[in-house]
Image (cartoon, rainbow, N blue to C red; front, side, top):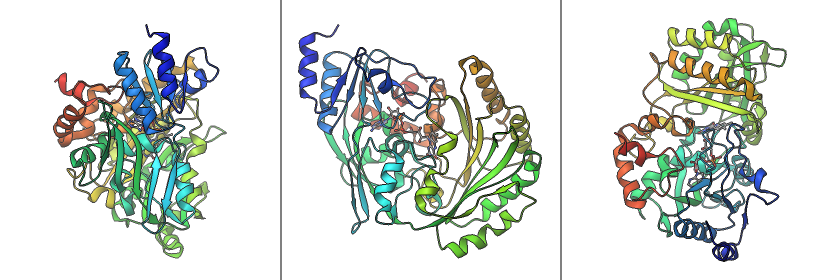
Length: 453
Ligand SMILES: Cc1cc2nc3c(=O)[nH]c(=O)nc-3n(C[C@H](O)[C@H](O)[C@H](O)COP(=O)(O)OP(=O)(O)OC[C@H]3O[C@@H](n4cnc5c(N)ncnc54)[C@H](O)[C@@H]3O)c2cc1C
């Protein structure tokens, strides 16, 4: 039981505010992207600064409270919210300063992708992020960050110059390639395990108008479209990134589609994309020149906040006929019209970084094979979850024992080792140095995984 005096003292040290269950904003603040997550923290600190985060760590330690850390609150596993502890909510920390001369952006941890992008695009600059612009930059970057600029400029974490982090003992540390380099290595892929990152400094790149959008065919054409897609990806230049998917349109028709992003001269993009656009008879072709912000927002409509989500994912190196058959069969029986199964390309610069340069180990030309199951009615939970698990199980002969940490669900602690592969032991050792008693465990936890082996 927390004494009122301690609570009052804590509240008075915060520049942000402190919410208790009876407060008006409490319910809206504890809710996150995935409506399946319904946890009730004892306290929510809406932090305004790194100093507030330091105060949170001190208070949680003094009161023996569990903590969770919320960036954008987008992660489907729901680790951003704890039951009964202190939720450290960074969503109001939205400072952003772009330095066009140095081509860097200093960004606080509560920014969404859309907010970072719009700041940077004022100067025709950008850094790699993801493909749905409501995602938080913090969780995205700390896990890796696979997106449209990946072929040309790498993952989000590959573009970090520095971070500021509040550690488990309440210190504010900087990390760069030369200052606390072990921490800097670990946060680039394993970040949520180490501490609370309060700000990021990103390297920026010139990005003007792009060629983006999608093209789609009837599901029955998938056996023809996907082998072509696999070959196209294998030969594609760094400027082009692709993302194939199975989805359902409003009238219930099931389609297979390919979304594209060409980051280069518009004429060259139109030429490179011509073979894809000439394939068969697409039912829709929305590929066109567009602004970078429109490209980044392109995925938003399919992922509104507040639906129920259960995801599975694995990396896939080659789209073989057997894997395509499984994907097509499951797409045909998918219980929810909102679900998408995606094959998000990772290649080019993102794949060329050495697997041991950062904690993100999975550096290959490959697909992130995503089973993004979403629905509305709680009565449909069981059949949607079952369908997702069965699809993932059926794909096992073709997928790698490798997964992107940001796609792991709340029930996948047994796959955390597969998220780090050969880097797992080094990450565990750095975790032990900076967080020896596993204070930060509301994440895909490497210490618990190591301890259970
Ligand atoms: C619709 C949708 C589309 C997506 N598309 C992509 C994509 O294209 N590419 C891609 O790479 N990923 C994608 N993702 C996955 C996304 O990268 C993760 O869900 C990511 O964790 C979201 O970050 P967040 O800050 O919003 O999440 P949160 O839920 O707030 O946090 C996720 C984890 O990170 C921890 N964390 C958050 N902030 C901090 C911090 N500042 N310091 C320390 N730990 C912190 C949390 O405690 C939690 O464990 C997508 C997710 C969704 C829901």
